[in-house]
Image 1 (cartoon, helix red, strand yellow):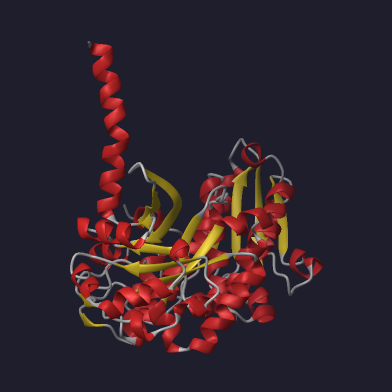
Image 2 (spheres, rainbow, N blue to C red):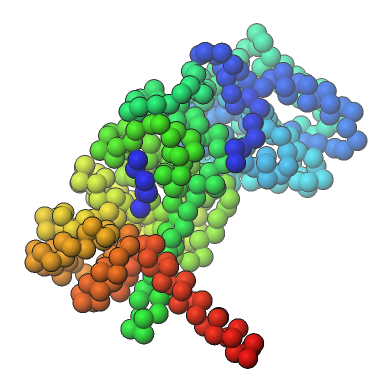
Length: 427
């Protein structure tokens, strides 16, 4: 579920523009860093990535942004430095005693960042160069020289594609516009996404009343992000630009999962838009996962996204199935239920929102009949914040629930035996 439709990462060199409409790379900053390395007692390695050439090959600007972000994350993990040139090419510099060997980093770049099922590995390897220092100081200096002011590569296309929007820190206020969305995307790209990640379990209720977690949903809290980054922007889920914002969040979440090399060892679900499923980014993401991990990962498709283009949604579900992922239909409401045939979709689970204001609708015979038409073993009552949802669910033989009320009850049930054990020890 995407909630709330309504610590800052440190500055990376070469990411920000200076002046309206102007793209600034970090060539001079890299040159100054190179000069400091001459006097350093440790050995370093510089690995360069020719992203301008890669963009000309695959032509996908969104994928390019993700790949560049992944390189920044890798540099942070290796305790190294990353520099972006004005044209989008990058240089990653790290101490040899930290990384072991340049070949290890190159192998990781190939496997986790540049890997593309449509591009030959030999072609991708040509985009990488490594310079060991101090042995290759002159060679690295010549490489930097290509990008200095007046250099032949200063205005290449990857820099323009990855450049920051005009006035990125301008006030964001009022209804969202296309220009405003660009600035919001810029702000999101500059923040560490982990601070906005949330988790919530789907629980199974056993006959004994015990709650047992059976799946973990991970999502970016749009409410928290809005409050922190763009509090005065008006968001409406019916606005076409809202779906574009959701794609930005999809991109950041998939990027985070790839960068952190998250292993999906148990059942996990994440939200995803239909458009993102059809993006090549999805193919890259799938290529990073083992088959057994894909079986554990489920993608939640919002019913509103489905109804905008049913044919496209059916195709998206088919693609996810072909890639080996699970599928969940999310966001059904009781008002919609009598009028749709959601069980026609090949979904593992179907989530029906049943908050406090929805429970009263269960007195409607049409709603009850619509629920009974669905496969009860695949239904989840979600956003439960009222005991009525559980009582009605028990009557209908619904076993799976999600919501803050369920979290609270499960936590209380787990705490009771621990408290009793502590009391027994004390006595």
